[in-house]
Length: 419
RNA sequence: GGAGAGGUGGCCGAGCGGUUGAAGGCGCACGCUUGGAAAGCGUGUAAAGGGGAAACUCUUUCAUGGGUUCGAAUCCCAUUCUCUCCGCCA
Image (tube, rainbow, N blue to C red):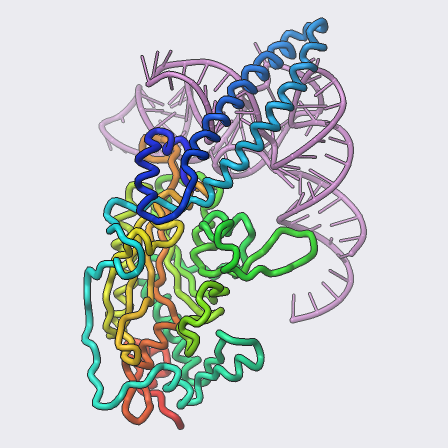
């Protein structure tokens, strides 16, 4: 969420910056409401002062007057609250402003590749898709998932289940022991307020799975990413400078409705309602967001380097970024069956956008209270890493070589084959 | 599910109708002390919002929302969250 105080300073600049994101916002309404809101506040405060003075004087002859003032305060208050509500409503639906580094563009076609790494494997046969490989091995079972649950779910079995677990553990080990992240095993449900904090609500409620605990209690949602719950660790906090930066990592299932993607990636486990993801979250001084973003992205690509998977790094254009992000790098892994790169990680700096929503602040060296910067990135998506391994390491006979880095996590297994 | 207790500043914790934005402590900052540090002593230290170029100033805030009152952290009601005990389940 944006800080109105900051917006006010240069309203046209704000408007211009947001134009890049191709969203429709009624800036004029926002402006008018802000002015009205402040007018009412001023009126209210003047009356409150008067009332306070009477009360302090303890002059009985003025008590009746004080009561009258209370009534008019109530009236003004009601109007002001209404305005504030619509104001907040507009404000909480406005996406973050893209950083000046971000290339302008409409959609994914305008993203810019900035790095390519690894060797694209050459096959002397037609490379199969991950679901063909997995089904042939009898270790990916989509039909069974359809029977027990429904579409966009999968049973991962046997050695592939072991591989999935190994991927997760391998990533966690690198990020905790080497990259300095603190491992967290968080709740997978988040409250409505928590979901608001990172920007999933109110605008993207349709993408979320809501869970009913008990009638009448607060709303709860299955987390669409561990970002939600990890970032909100600092919600409503004022953090001391010495405890920054904070870096968290978690491997969790994620749940998404994928409401807007009917017909997209319907085959295989590219796009599922439930998937594992290792998530990185950093809480930093607001001035350090961009350098932390580079660091975080390197932590993510390091995994791909260690797994010896070919990938590229792109910077998202203004039109393709997520709601809360100010700058995003996507890392895409090579998928032989599709003959193209597919997203396996997305690392974003959110600047202070989420912090304002969460009321997460810190004291800087000058003892000023400022909003923290928040970042999140996948390090990496476990399901898609599994896919990438299956496809890039597949052999002519249908078996799959296990990347060297993962073998210690799999009882030194070197290859997964049918029997 | 039954019975209690409680939510106060960055943190801990007093206060239970009127200069209380809130004692005390911790933490933090600055100063004194020291060869240097620690300890000790002294001083300072909430957030949000409004006005102002600024100095500064005003309003709000003691879980949330209502109510009583000229006046509420303090009294009443509702909601919510946390904790303890009993039961149940793991």
